[in-house]
Amino acid sequence: MARPKPTAGELEILNALWRNGPSNVNEVQAALVRGDRVAYTTVLKQLQIMFEKGLVKRDDSSRPHVFRAAVVEAQVKRRVIADLANQVFEGSAMSLVMQALSVKRATPEELRRLRQLLDEMEGDQS
Image 1 (tube, rainbow, N blue to C red):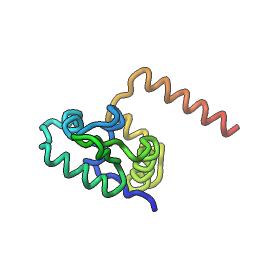
Image 2: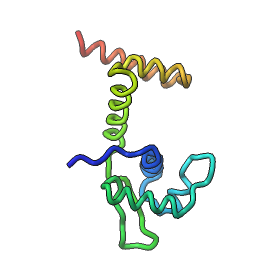
Image 3: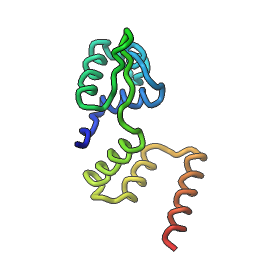
Image 4: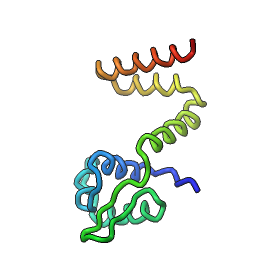
């Protein structure tokens, strides 16, 4: 059975776990990058829901409990992008990329990597 697609709040927690590795609730709470501090009980409840959904695993052998992502970062991000492209950009990867680049300017390194990816994709088509 496929795991449910994470909500925006769940993605924020997953990003913190992918970035920092296994963490307890306090560590997850501190890693969230929202403007306002999120209450401990809110983070705990969200992690409990994510555990029930199969999005995180929980190590009950220690106190406090330690949580880690149970889903692969690249797979989740591919699914979210595919859904976004289909729902908002009528399936057009080009429209999605153009809109993303118009909203947030790419760094020189990101542009270099994008050119490299485009070159590789063109090579695959010949």
